[in-house]
Image 1: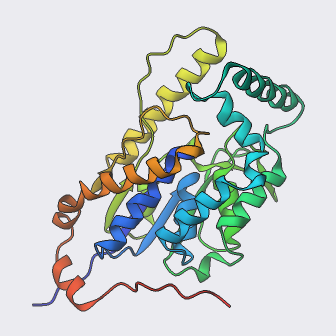
Image 2: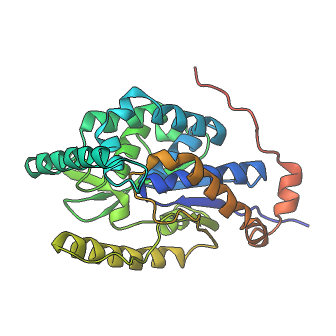
Length: 309
């Protein structure tokens, strides 16, 4: 009996440090031999998805994350200062005050620039995780989603430098300066596409597995204009997210709790939660994939990754 293999797309959403859970999801999909034909990423989803599509295994990616978080560069970075400022209980009072003041230093500094965090830190981080290749060279077809602040249009990177595409997709408004590309002013894809389900479908995926690491709902008091504005943004973002998830065949939601977007030190726990959530969805994934058992019988996924010369 003849059957046509369905193209499976993986849509990885944004969410800052919470997106490290994507690594755990990738571990399970690879371990179970689920064939991924396309990866589309927004923000941190573009960083993790781009690294994996380039040939970096999930285990190797986790090791790179852990090494980076223990590096002197990260420990002295503005990102680390933000993480400390939003720490919950693990820091002493003096450390919290110091971190808070440093955080405010960057905020005041940003009054005169389009981004809080240094461009050099951002570029170095992208270069550490993403190889210097073209999107067309990836092991798995890859797309990165960004937003053009000049026109308000969604930009889908399907060719060109990987690092440039991922950097544009990860340029969180306010945190990092937008990237100038001709007439375009590129910023975080999550502005209009928090989970790129629709892009995966548009790019030819028959079945879409979407991973979202954002959680809606807050009991925090709205104490000032910033709190109110942030809450309004959350509500708008949630509506966009739900519209995207409605188009997915399977939705994986790792339990990331209320972890702050800058809390990268929780990497191991976040990756574990990604694994747990993906394992819980395996039956659902297999159910929406006609012929998957036959496909897996005749096509084995490569377990070894060849390093590029």
